[in-house]
Image (cartoon, rainbow, N blue to C red; front, side, top):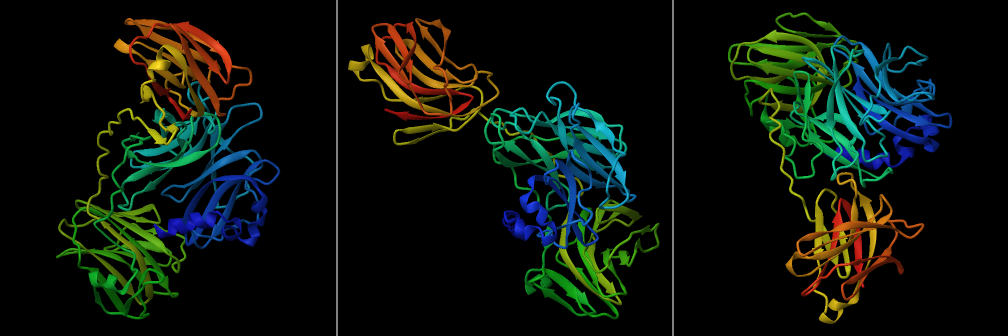
Amino acid sequence: MRPYKRLLETVNSDETFFAAGAAIFLGARLAWAPEVIHENGVFRLYFNADVGTGQQLWMAEADSPLGPFKTHPGGAMTAPWRIDISPLMDDAGARYLFSCIKPPDGDARIEARRVTAPWERIEGGWQTMLAPQPGWEGGWIEAPTLLKDASGYYMIYSGGGAHLPTYQSGYATAPHPLGPWTRRGLLIPSTPAVPGPGHQSVVLAPDNLTPYLIYHRKRVAEEGWPRELMIDRLQMGGGQLRTHAPTTTPQPAPPRPAFQHWFDSPASLRSWKTDGGTWAVNGAARELVQSAATGTATARLNRLMFNDGVIEVNVRRMGDAGELGASLVTRNSRLPLTLYGRVLAASPPLETASLTTNPNVYHQLLLTRRGDRVEMKFDGRIVATHEMPRGPAHLELWTQGCAAAFSGIAVTNYTTPRPLGPPEVEAARQEWHRDGNRIEQRGLGPGLQVFALPPLPQSAAQNGAFAVRLQGWALGITSGFPKYGVRVGGANGDYIEAFIDPKTAVLATHGSQGGREVAWQNSPLPLGFTYTDWHELQLSRRGDVWRFAVDGASVQSRTVALRGPLRPSLVTEDARAVFALR
C-alpha cells in the first residue's frame, strides 16, 4: 500500500505531480476524472480539464505512476465540451476512446471512436454508444468504464447528475467496443445509507482474478459535491455483472495470492533455487536481478507448487540483446514463455504475436493454467494459448544471453474468483452519539430513530414547557418526508410529536390518544427558515392543549390528553440532525 499512499500525498501538490510542461493545469478549473494506463514503460494519465475554454480531453505522460506527469505537447485532444475520457485497447491492439459529451441542445450521452495512437487530435468521428433514457438516468449519463471477458464487452456508466443523491450506476454489454450496446440494468443503486454512488472504476484484487468496484458516494443526501470513497466486490461472467454494492457493513478483505514477492530484502531469495548467472535482490528497487549478460540462468520457486492457477511475473531486460521469460515446469515437461525484442512466443513453437515493445522497461506476463490449457497474456493482452500436461508445476524465471530484473511475482492457486456470496443483512441502526447536552443522530435510512430522555418533572407535566435547540445536517431519500423533532409520551402508549419537515417547509404534528391516531397537521415554518441553521423548538402545555413554537414564534396548537408521567424523546426519520438540550 505504500505506493498508493505516496501517490495521494503527491496529488495534493500540482507542482510535484505535474511537470513544468504541464504548468497550465496549476490554474485549471475543474481538472478531474483521471484514468491511468501503463503501456510500454509509459504511464499515461487521461483526464478532462477546463483551462478557460470549456472542458476538454487531455493526456499527460510519466515514467512512474507517481509522476511528474507532462502534458502532451499537442495540447488538448478535443474541442470543448467533453469529459470522462476512458481508453481501451482490444486483444488485436486496436485503440478506442470513450467519453461523455453534452451538446448545447441535447442530453449528455456517451460516445466512442477508434484512434490510431495514444494521443491524437480528434476533430470528429465520434459515434453514440448510449443516450440517456427516461427514469433514473435523468437526461445525463457519463463516466464509462470498459471491461472485457470471454463473453464480450461490458460498459459501466453513471447517470442522474453527480451532485444529486439519485446519482447511480448501471451497465450495458456489447460484442464489440463500438456496439451495439444493450442495457442490462442498474448496478450500484442509491440507498438511504449511501446516496449518490457512482463514477466507478474497476481494479483487480492482488489475486489477479477478483474484480472490485471503486466509486464515490455523496456524503450527504442533498445537492452538492462533498464525497467519500467506497469499495465493493464485483462479479462478472456470461454477460452479467453482480455486486452487493453499496454496502455499509464490514466486508471480507480482498483475496491475496498463495505466494507474492516484491523482493524488498535479501531474505526474499530464500524461496528460490538458482542455477547459473548471478542472482541478487535489490531491496531499494524491489527487484530480483540476474546481472550476468552471458549464458543461461534460472531461478525456480521451490516454496510452492500448483496445479491450476494464475501466475504474474513482471520483467525487464537489462541490455540490447538476449532472451528472457518465465516457464512452468512439471516433472516431465517444461513450457517457457519467451520475450525477445518484439516477439512473445512459447516453446514448443506456437502462433506468435508481434508486439511493439521496449524490452528495457517493465512488462507484465500473466499465465493462467486451467487443466491442460495455459493462456498467456502480455501487458493485459491475450497473445497465445498452449497445451501442457496436468500435474503439480513450479514457476521458473530464466535468462539467456542477457541480464534482467524481475519484480512483483504472484501465484494464485485457483482460476475462478471466489463466489460473491449472499449479501450481508443490515439491520436498522440507531446512530445516536451524546456529548453532555449535545446529542447527534448520524444515520440515514427508513424507520424512526428515537433517543429517550429522562421523564419531565411532575410540576412541568401538567402545565409547563419543553424546549430543545436543533439543527439539520443531511436528508435521506427513502421516506419522501425526512424529518427531525421531539416526541412526548404518556401512559398507555399515548404521545404527541412535532417535526421539522425541511422538504415541505412545515412543522408537522401528530399523535396518539386512547389507541386512536391524532391526524397529521402541517403549519408553515417562519419565513426564511433554513434547516441547516440552529433553531429552537418548544412544546408547551396547558391542560390538554399543546402549543408549538419555532424560534419563539407560535406555529400551531393541538388538543391531546396525555396521562401519567411524561417522557420526552428526540426523534428523526431519514435525517441526520444534532440537538442541544436547554
